[in-house]
Image (cartoon, rainbow, N blue to C red; front, top):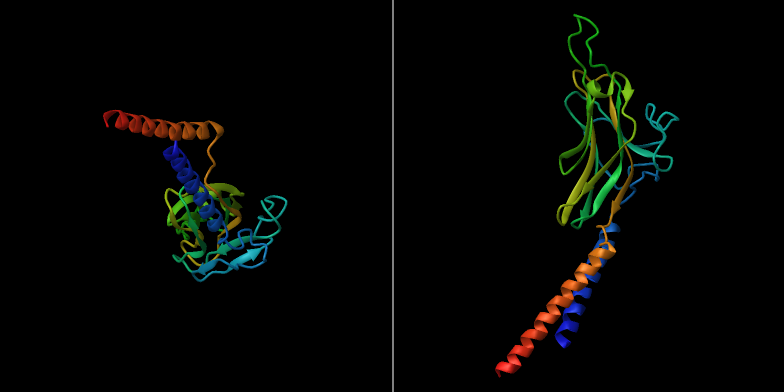
Amino acid sequence: MQKFRKIARVAGFAFASGLLLSTAALAAPTNLGFETTDSTGWTGGGFGPYGATDTYGAFGTADAPTPEGAYFGYVQAADQGVYTTLSQTFDLTAGQQITGYAGFRANDFYTPVGPSDPVEYNDNGYVSVNGSNLIYWDVATVGNFQISGWQAFTFTAPSDGAYTLQIGAENTGDGNFSSGTVLDGVAILSAPVPEPAGWAIMLLGVAGVGAALRRRASVSQIQA
């Protein structure tokens, strides 16, 4: 029985430690909804403008209201072939999630306007975690001078580590009619807590280990 109590204490300590680690990880993210009205906590890259705004094209209007608060983040493409980016890195434990909303403003045209203008200005944008795209857009799929609307995304950390959320936008064909990507409502969620059935299985497992130890102790006494 004493060994069983010890196992239970160890299991409880491990679970409590996990909760503490999750809480500590949640304290690091900064300005996830851009309600500071700037890009505090985020890192910009490339040559185009980036930051926080309350309107960007149709985003932030009645056609595409902001998912959270009044402001949201944005990046706008500039030089051809160079992404304008905005990113933030989070220290996550396995099972934690990054969620949010993103969208693309296709401010160019994909279909050539005539034989004298054969270049297809297929600007593109993305939202990614550690370089892997969660969502990718381009003018061809969104439509000439259209917006994608806000799209929800979710990323689940497969293991403990650092994960960088990034949005980007790039001009294709020229540096004019710059398209852009927007971001809002980012949240870092804790790993899911086991359901009651899961707790029951865990407790049964601990009880089974305790029973096995008691049987082993009984056999040892008989053999002695």
